[in-house]
Amino acid sequence: MIEDERKIEDHLREQYFDLLPEMRRVADQLEAEVKYHLLPLSRSLSKYEGLTVKCRVKACESAVDKLRARQEGATFDRSRPDLYSLTSLNDLAGVRVMAFPRRHLVEIDRILRGVFGPWNPDPVADDGRIHALKYHGYCEASSKVKGEYQIVSMLIGLFWEVEHAAIYKPDPGLRGINKHLGMRERTREVFKALEAFEEQFDSLVAASQRRSHEIE
Figure 1 (spheres, rainbow, N blue to C red):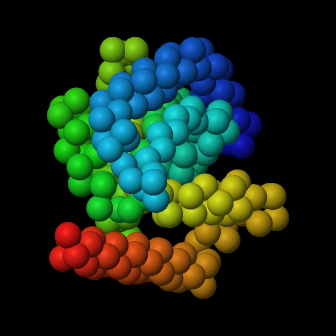
Figure 2: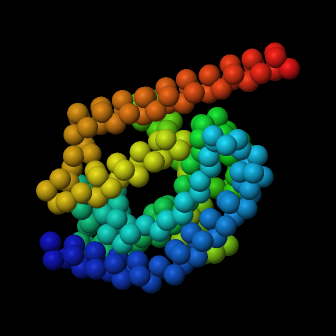
């Protein structure tokens, strides 16, 4: 059974490298389109504000692992290799839009929904709180590979980058720590702290602007 499952994995790895040129084209097109449509907003930001667009192509083993994790028991059915294709994943290629402060997320979402209106929403949520907006669909660069874009607070987005490197791509002996209850609770506390920071920051900025208008 293990040998048969490896055959499925090897087939998926071959498929990955066949799809890789299209994945790169999708990522490049999404990055160009998103940056173009967000350019007016980027130019209007204050010095203390920020907007960053990062594109990425999913790594081979990460794609295979994600497809495997979606199966019952996190294993491939050796009798049905035809069931599995990396094209069923929604995030082989995509972009992440990060903004500070988070109040810009609503405007970014409005702008990009006007461009990618038919795309399917799939927000990132935990404990009843939405941490990021996420959409997936097809663009002109490929009819096989779906693209994805995320919209997230810059503070949470940067935390995710550190978390992903430390927890989701660790040494083999550290795998699974992302499911540890204590680690999950600490992660929720980080989210709450970062959101509280932005809320306080925005409150102080608004108060400062009101004082400036009163003086004028």
